[in-house]
Amino acid sequence: NRRVVLATRPRGVPTPQDFRLDQTAVPAPNEGQVLLRTLYLSLDPYMRNLMDEAGTSYAPPVPVGAPIVGGTVSRVVASRHPQFRDGDLVLGNAGWQDYALSDGKDLIPLGEMARPSLALSGLGMTAFTAYVGLLDIGQPKPGETVVVAAATGAVGAVVGQIAKLKGARVVGIAGGADKCRYAVEELGFDACLDRRDPQLAEHLAAACPNGIDVYFENVGGAVFDAVLPLLNNGARVPVCGVIAHYNEDDLPAGPDRLPKTVTTLLQKRIRMEGFIILDHYGNRFDDFRRDMSEWIASGRVKLREDVVDGLENAPDAFIGLLEGRNFGKVVVRLTDA
Ligand code: NDP
Image 1 (cartoon, rainbow, N blue to C red):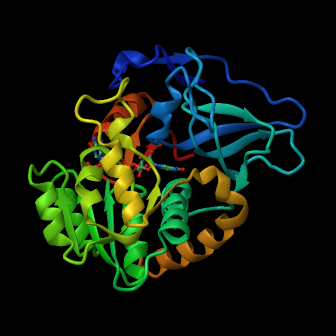
Image 2: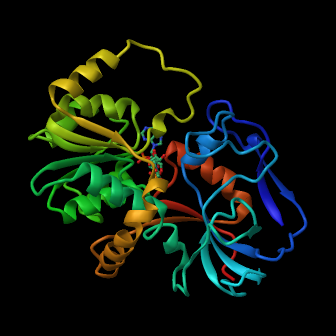
């Protein structure tokens, strides 16, 4: 059983030395357990937060020396559980390893799928995050302006496309010309700006002549600074993630902008609301699966997967995800079997 374990806790930007590929015996299931073989592993920014000592409010830290956690599409290869049979395809949490045991409580049966990675991309956690954050918190109305960064990524690409379906004007922000072209030409965004543009604030203002009604917050940092002055009265800001800050050990240098931020929220009656997608599976996952399956089948939502071959390449792909080397939802293919 090959596993990628956390070798040391990263300081700032993770390096290849923070990860180690090791090998253990394939475990045998006890009564009530299944043995899972990982087909696809999802790589997600939150994993960086779980590499820190403190962990997060929603998940404990990954112990040093343990395999890194992660959502997977897995095949049941040995079942001693009454509800699962050998050969079943399931959505699970096997983490960064070839094999894992489960008691079945965290498994969602998938049936047979022509494209199993879809359970981690278009029908997976990140697309579900886009759906809940945009529709339940952002609540875009026809004609309103929606802005989203990391616009071609797993969450952002779906946010923008659903916002278009709801009749909004959509402005993306992404890393580089290729991603921006894709957002406009393939995903149908109205405009897309390069996040490294030194004149981002001016260009964003020009791209949003009626201000911003919904800002779907994926990144924080300089993008948030450019967005804040453009928010309209009554704007909604679903706070999904702040990837620009995940590698920071300390507060950034510079003036304290909190008073200006809070004053803007107050005077413009802005609703800024954080959410963690784990809380919403019980009440919204079925709606999501129904709507999204239909949108994907009809071609109204397009998905781009950035498929990385081989578990041994997961650390490099993960480091790349945190700096924007990925183009689309990152999934690691361990085997097609
Ligand atoms: P993506 O597929 O969008 O990949 C991450 C992207 O972030 C990179 O490709 C890059 O895009 C962008 N990025 C990296 N560094 C910076 C930076 N310094 N400033 C601005 N952008 C940067 O990842 P996901 O779609 O999976 O995740 C997007 C966000 O959603 C993350 O913040 C993640 O933590 C959050 N999330 C939150 C969930 C929740 O429950 N609240 C659930 C799932 C995700 P580019 O090159 O285009 O700038």
